[in-house]
Structure formats: structure tokens, C-alpha cells
Image (cartoon, rainbow, N blue to C red; front, side, top):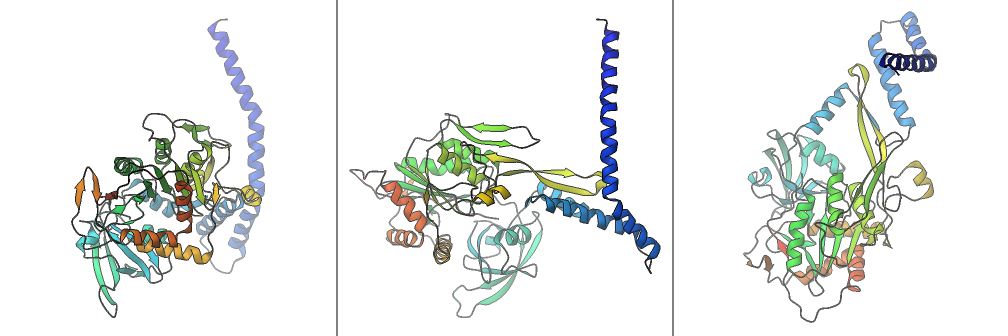
Length: 473
């Protein structure tokens, strides 16, 4: 067939398609105009009849913004949000810019934010902020009663180089607590998401929970970009100490980066689907484990609770579905969705919408949808359920708040083959207090002890990563 004839055929086909779609497009627009006609009528009536002059542009903007918010509310997506022009500008500055902190690890207490630890050489250290201090005001605003994430991300953090004024309740060796005000300049802080089960005399973390059976413990607080490499460093130390079993604590982990979750899960799995993402109008993607870089096999337990979310649920679900670990605790939060930010016409702002869900290897959707709430099934269900009463949960929080406290005056220790041998008579007493105050951890340890035999020869070496201090925010 001549090329000219082929070109004419294609042109006719395109015109036919446009003519077929045009009536539908016109009908769709007519429906929109008809639906929003009452708004235009109300505006016209106000302009004609209201006793005072009104700002018509303001009326229109108010109506449009209210309509957008109403439509977003109607789809029952808790993660969908409308960002007006100003909100969107602030959102872009937070996501595209670099944020800093003061270099402290804090915990919410009734008075405000209690400092558990500080980074050496951080702005907090330079300002002589000590563990035990309680931050009650940030730039004059009270942080008492605020959610921890809101208090830290919204007030304590900020652009590197910016100054923040803190009002601190100082309890250090004083019968009557004293208030002091300090000005701190924020800096870029490298967050270490890895924790152990308690502080050692050096101020670092202990990672070997059972030194007889060589059962280790790692708490992963967030899936940062370098979470997998930081985990590698701790695991190598425990492998050098003859690791035989591991408890991976993902409780209170809000998630983080998908790539980080995939990398961490891949460390424990040789093959198999880690997670799949799919949506009504989005392309399906999946990520699977690979043999390269996989840790040696050992019995394993994962701890989760109702605040284990997003990337943390991906890891817990993958290890559960591939029978790599038992999962101990409570059903996870159910945050397994992908959000996309879409700019609106006319520089009116943007909307953030959920466009896809995450699915585990067994096909289960992680996200807590309206349908999932009705059926009572979402997130990751534990294989060994351990529900906490309110009193037990409060005791657990108090126990871990105390364990996270930094020891200020630490003695020197002797290093041998990368594993520090510590003469620490308080270690066993501390472990008893931990297991007494944390029923879920005690259950996980008991499950692993049944799988890990007592070796013929035992040592007392502990793994202490003193250089890996807890740094948050």
C-alpha cells in the first residue's frame, strides 16, 4: 500500500476517534457545569442582594477550596490532603530541602520532651544539654501533650543554620528543678536507626541479649537510607561473637524508605517476593530477594505492635510469609499505600492522593482500608500474638524510656577482636528488669531459646557498639 494512502487512513482514524470522544467530553463538561451551577447562583445572589460589598474572588476561592476538601473527605482516604498555594510551597521546601536538628534522642513525658541521649559534638552537646533535661518550650511554644512526631518534626527540627530557643527543665542534681533558656543552632544530623537492648557502661548499646545461647537483639527505629549498612555493621560484630539467634524489634517503627525496607528484608531472605505494589490506574511493580549478601541462617523472631507501620510492615510480613521468622506481638498499624502529589491547574495548590497499595508475598494487602476495618484484617498479624493491657503497655514504655537513657560518665573498656569484653555486674540485673517489664520481648526470647541449644562452652563477651550512639532528630 502506498505511504500516502496509509497516512490518509491513519488521519481518518484519528478524526473518527476524536468525533466519537467529543460528545462524551461535552456531556461530561455539561454534567459538571450543571452540578456546580448552584454555587454560581449563590455567588450571583450574594453579589446582587447582600447589603455590603463582597470580595468576589475570595468567595470563589473559598467555594473551590471547600469543594476540594469535601471531595477528598468523601473518598475516605486518611492520607489524601489538599494543599493550598501556601501549604504546597511549604511542603515542597520540606521535601526538596535539607532539614536539621540539634542532635538529641527524646521521649515524650507529661512535662514535654525528656532528653535521653545526645550526640557527641552536636549542637545539643555544645549547648550543654544533658540526658535527663526536659524541653518544655520550643521558641516559646509548649510541647507538653504534643505527639512526639509533631513536636520533633514540626518544632524541634528545622533548616540547618537556623536558631531555636529552648526552655529546659533542669533536674540535674537539684532538689528543686530549675528553668533555663538556651539558644541552639540547628545542624545536619546523621540519624542512626539501630538500637540495642540496653546501654553499656561505655554509653553504647548492648546487642547480645542471651550470652549463653548467643541470641542477639536489634531494634530498628526507622528505615533510613543507610539502615541496611548500619545493620550490617552490628550484625558483623554479633557474627564475630558467634550469633545463634536474633530478635528484630520493629515496634513503634513508623516506616521510612521502600528501598531500605527491601534491602533489610533481602539480608534475611535468599529468594522470594518481598513486596508488590499495585493500583487501579498504576503499573504493578514487585521486588524479590536475591541470594547475594544474605546473612547466614539462624532462628529469628520479629517484634511488632500497633505502631509498626509502612516499611516496617513490609519487612515483618516478608519474613513471616517466607517462614524466615516468627512474628511476636500485636497486629501492625496497616499503612501500606503509595501517595502521589498532583499539582492543580492555575497554581491553586496540589492534592495528595493514594494511588496504589502494597501487597505481601501471600497476596495480603497491608493497608487498613475501609473494607479491611470491616473484616478486622489488615497489616501484619503476628504468628505468636501477645496483646498488652494498658497497664502492661505503660510499664513497657517506662522500661524502654529508662533503657534509652545515656550514661554520662563511662569507664574505659578493653577491646578484643572487635567485640568488647565488659566487666559489668549490672548487666544481668538490667536484663531481668527488661524482661520483667517487656512481656513481648520475654515471649520472643523464650520462643528462640526453645530453638537454640545451650552450647558446650560459653563465654561472657558482649557486643557493644559505643560509637553507634542513638541519634534522633
